[in-house]
Image (cartoon, rainbow, N blue to C red; front, side, top):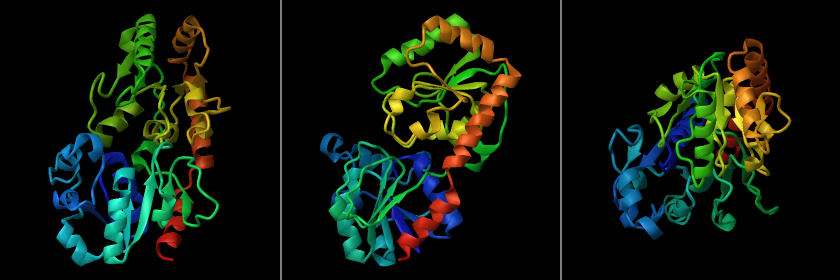
Length: 318
């Protein structure tokens, strides 16, 4: 089966490849070439960015985009994929038109709770959040995005750093400032800030060893949910987590965090108590291991990639 999906997020693309290609044996294709934009199919963020995002994600620049499976609009029309996947709301209606042209079914991958879903215009929804859906829609699939299997390699790192892997602290300058204040109080040499505001990391090849070397992962993401690549990767690898659990209320990530001894919820905690807890915990082998065990167990009790792949296969091949 041939599946055409738009590309806008490297980790999401990799998750599609792990499930659709590696597990199910499908062929995964992605649009390339500005014709997709110029003819009205690829419209992501056009209303405010005009063609800037199209030029970023429809090029064949190998430093930005995966080379495998690139197809021009003309090639895609000849290939006639059976499934077309829009991973951003802005591409749904254009991809609906393309799917109708080639006789394909349209899938919307829902990766953020705030994503708009035109239920009457899609055939299947792949939802990695907790998005509400109408009772009449019978193509709904709840699933978890696959992550690189190397994240599952358990490495306890007592006395390692407390690390934040948030790429951008969206609308949360206060949270970034708080992280800095805690680091200064504990000792900045024991903290790592990765992402746009600190040290950039290029993909899983650099994120995985940095996460494995960390004693604790600081994940206070104010605008969750997206699905939560940092949260799920840290949980899979058995890393203790510092969180503000209320940021995930009503969202998929709350299943990982609530009532979990592997998570320190700093909501409402006194600043000095947070500092004291980190000083006491970071080099405590037994506590680090116990919290890691709790998080690995919680992840495995929720996530089942084989189950999800079976549901996707049934829906795609129906």
